[in-house]
Length: 137
Image (cartoon, one colour):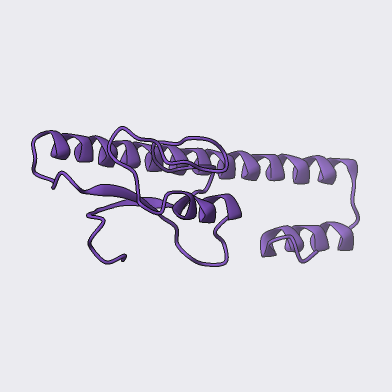
């Protein structure tokens, strides 16, 4: 039961301690279904908000390069959080693009070319803009 959260463990203990009827099983299933739907909705909302933010950053960089408010030699670099939760495919993107990429150029990833994060669901990656001569953050 370690994979369950506290609420799920409590509901199961209560169900088994008080006897599990057909009605009780149906109620548990319905509550669980509602919780999963709410969780999935929040993941989708977060994912799409992140996608919109990254598209906006990309368009701002593109405009900055066009109007020369960003140096011509500035490049986009993929960054991960650098912790134990970073997926292997995401960790490989900076390795596959060590010199960064220019505007309009996709990042090479193990999953194919990608213009900007998110790479997959719950992606916490980001893009930074810097000159190749500037020190890595």
